Length: 263
Ligand SMILES: [Zn+2]
Ligand SMILES: [Zn+2]
Image (cartoon, rainbow, N blue to C red; front, top):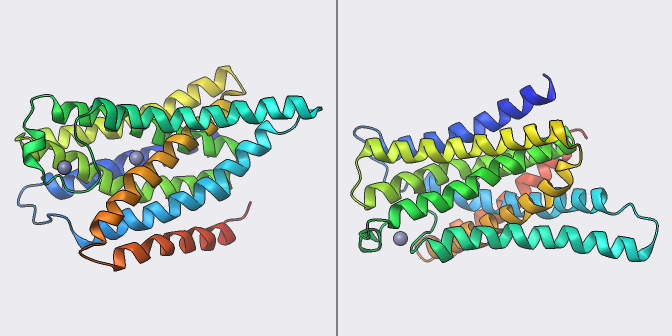
């Protein structure tokens, strides 16, 4: 498979997982409210994602940015990479939480917070910016090499079903129809694919695109793992302490795959 075909295949799979998550909730005669499986997926995804950021993405960022002749140049380069990381983190905070009045992962149970006409749209809009960079992460990781690509793909994939579920849940809580809920999941899935295609298009013109895309999307992914998923794990843990333990299972799963996938 050519590198563009690979990006499209794995990018398409993560985008489809969004739609699957929405369909679980919005399909006719849906019975899932928030299944145990989804709760565990959020926790597993959080642990796997944190390990993938610190053990896979950040070492690659350092490797890409580090080769410099002088200490002063190196310091400058590291500062540049870390600034991109911070910018990615803050961008998602801005769109998911500063601009959107109410957003969190998992089932939307606060119907009162969703009554403001724009609340659901700003939440879906913020989530679409996040999912765009889910796509950027997967594509940038595959441009580094296939091992980094596959591990980041799994990290992103694990949270995609709960993410689609979240989008559908926001729409239903705000009084929209199941059809509109499914449309919202199609939008966040499409945004994911746009992220993949943007990196592919940019890479074809500027070969150092990945240099900037990787630290920025690592910052976004850090926000998703540490500030979207982990708070939801902590929230669910009050009802089910096992959910918290599954985060460590996610880290362990990362290490197993890390060993199994040849570099
Ligand atoms: Zn809520
Ligand atoms: Zn995401």
